[in-house]
Amino acid sequence: MLEIFLKTLPFFAIIGLGYWAGRTRFFPDEATVYLTKFVFYFALSAMLFRFAANLSLAEVLDWTLVTAYLWGTAFVYGIATAVAFLRRLDVATAAVEAQCAAIGNVGFLGVPMLVLLLGEKAIGPVMLVLAVDLIVFSSLIVILITGGRDGRMSLGVLRTVGLGLVKNPMIVAISAGLIWSALELPIPDPMNDFLAILGGAATPGALFAIGASLASKSAERAQIALWLSFCKLILHPIFVAIGVLWLFPIDTYSAGVVISAAALPVAGNVYMLAQHYNVAPHRASAAILFSTALSIGTVSVIVAWVGTL
Image 1 (cartoon, helix red, strand yellow):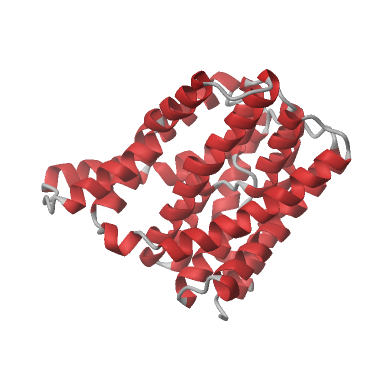
Image 2 (spheres, rainbow, N blue to C red):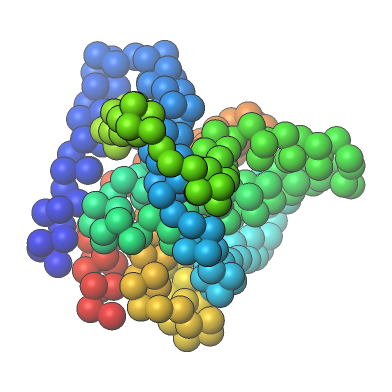
C-alpha cells in the first residue's frame, strides 16, 4: 500500500500546489476558470480522442461492465436519495446530494491517474465509467432538478439534456476517436504528435485546476459533507465491487479498474450544476473539498486492494 500511496502522492501534490496558488490568490478565480476551460475543451479532449482512436469499439464496449457499474452506482445513488428524503429535502436538493454520493472525478483525475497506476489497459474500462457518468447520471440530475421544480417532464428538459450531451467535449472526443478507429484510419505523425503534446498538458493542467478550484470551495455543512464523502469514497467502491465481482462478474483486471474509478472523490461538475441551478451549491462545494482531501488516503487503500484480486 505504501508503494501505491507514493505513486499517487505526486498527483495529490499537484492538486495541493493548485490549492496553494488559489488560496494565496497567486492564481485568481478568473485564471482557474480559463485553465479549466483549456483542459476541458482542448487538452483532455485531445488525450481522450488519442486514447479512443487507438482502441476498437469491440475492445471498449462491455455491457456486463456497464451493467455492473450502473447497478453499484445506482444503489448508492438510491441510498443517498432515501436519506435525503428522510431529512425532508426536496427533489432537487436530494438529486444534488445523490450526485455527490455517486459521481466521481473520473475525467480530470481518474483518466490520468488510473492509466498511470494500472497501465494503459485501464483506458477502456475508465472510458466506459466516464461515459455512464456523463450520459446517465449527468442527464438524470438535470431531469430531476428541472422536473422537480416544474412538477412535470417537458420536451424542453429533454432538449436541454440532449444538447448538453452533444456539446460535452469529453463525449465528443471519445465518440470521434472510436469512429476514427472503426474506420481504421491511420493517425498521421504530425496529427499524433499534436495530440500527444496537447494531451500531455491534460494531467498537470487538470490536477492544478482541481486544486485551484478547491481553494474557493466552502467548508460549510461539514456533517453533511462527511456523510456524502463516506458514500462516495467508501460505499460507492463497495457496491460497485459487489456488482463487478459477484452479481455481474467481469475479468479481474477490469473489475479492479472500475472499483478504483468508483473510489475517486466527488466530481467538480456537480458543483457547477448545483451552482447553475442554484440548488445547494455550498453542500456540493463542501462535499468536493472533504472528499478530495480524504481521498489521499482512501484511494491508495482501494487501489492497493484491487491489486490483490
